[in-house]
Image 1 (cartoon, one colour):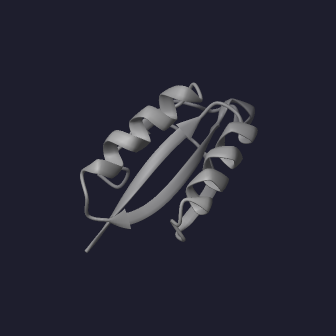
Image 2: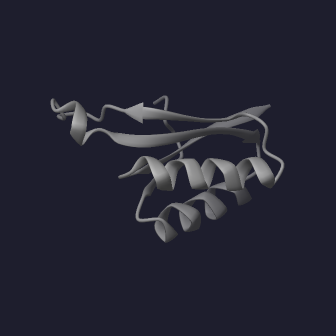
Length: 81
């Protein structure tokens, strides 16, 4: 079974850097998308999300939380609900 995670960053460069780091670490299902968060109408204000699928392992959540914080972002462990 797999888990989907979301890391959100204020700028595209940070999101792409993190996605590249995750890919280099061996995670193959990583994608960067523009995230329209609740309450944001201005498309320029939208943040950048990095979605990543991992095997079920709580260790990933700890790693992703630290990674998001290092790049001025935040981590959502349950992006689909």
